[in-house]
Image (tube, rainbow, N blue to C red; front, side, top):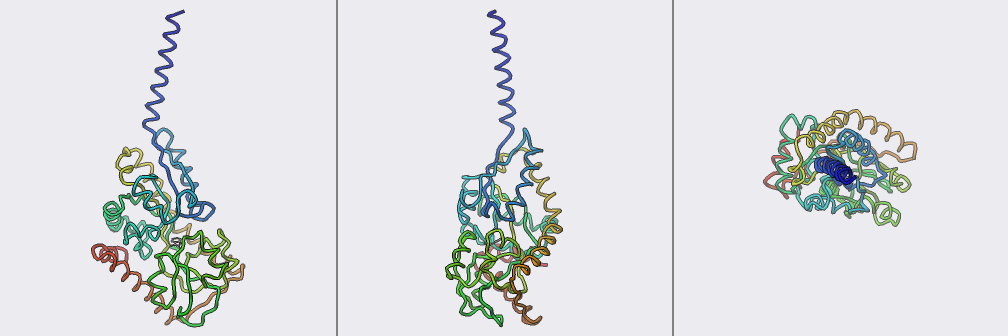
Length: 323
Ligand code: 173
């Protein structure tokens, strides 16, 4: 009886220790999003997390903590840098407080797939690791322009007298065009519009409807400019501690998603133009010469801003990201 008990205790102890080994090998990464949970970017990411988790049993799991209610949009970058969270879905404009270079990715004229081949991706990681203690895992959102949305009509390419909601993405450009600007997180745009605090806002082509902004939006100004960047970043210390299998799992799924970016965003862009039209959002269009000037100003002012704030890396990023 006694030996039996000892034996079964041993078996239990062994079983416990073997599951402990498995647990020690499986790592769980805590991920937050700087974008709203119900919005297009998180909705695009969730199936990706499911795939990683399905394949990553015993290796790596991602635990999605939540959106800006968990950590405010403009604090997400620092939370990754300091290791409060392990990973984030965010955009460079939300962490320019850590590094002004972050905002340069909005001006990429190469796809992320091209950036990986050209060396731009390595340059990004050199800067991101040094300045923000981050590993830049990959890009989920690309090939989608930003637009100026308005509640009032304009009939020339001049924003003088307009008060516009911005993030760093639009700051230099809208100011050069004469606007007065107010920085807010996406979560505050609706109220700012409702209260008439702003006459419009910058935002990419899709995502308005997620936050009900279409109700307050009368016009979309064409052409769109830049290339909305939404990416996954990982705390660098956490990244370095992952074993090769864990890294490979993340990288493999990231590359798979990126390979589908062009088709995914093209379809979204096309659908969204129709959806906005159906919702009664009118398009303000400039003549071809004015459109060209508008775009030239967007890039000139945007790069000038990045280079002014980062004389060291700004020019290198411009060269690496411009076609
Ligand atoms: O909040 C913003 O307008 C912004 O900067 C942004 C950047 C990338 C994707 C969506 C929004």
